[in-house]
Image (cartoon, rainbow, N blue to C red; front, top):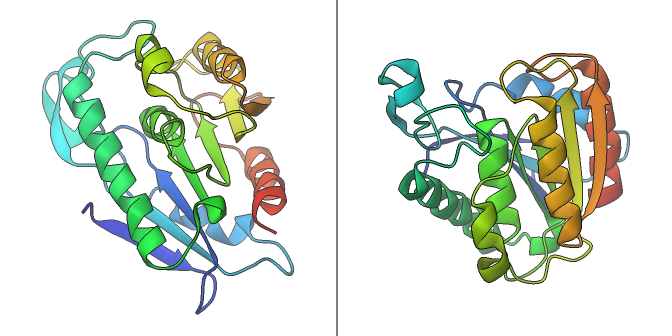
Length: 218
């Protein structure tokens, strides 16, 4: 199983958030936002931040870094390394199963991710045998779009939070909008939020995420 950073807001968590980082980062990347995500009277939540495997990334000159899959070139879907994508999906599914084994029900688990991690989170959330509490996809895009009709089950009404910077030079705003359209076409309940930022997460976005999590997990 992937190495993870875990933060629990109490001794007996009843909910879990599995949050995948972006390309080149690691599980510590979003660790500092946890205090800003809980609210007065919030249930005890386990935040799981996994470390992606280290692998060569073609677009970065073959440099080895933490990545959920290789990116061969920058184009509309960035879905070049299907084997790597599938491997990371399976590893994320293993993290979900671990939470189930620890007594947290599917309806109390949120899968989240930023950028490349968000792209994996989308794929995993759409393939669950039982509905999750929600999907959080930040500054990200859709992978394996041609596989969704045959691989995705019943995801109608899956709550989805999507946030994207209007000035994002890494993952163009239009790629995020396209992912939101596809999710809506599958029946997901997408909350789409745009922010005056680049490829990052702002405090306004963190505030919105906290409010959304409260709706899902309170």
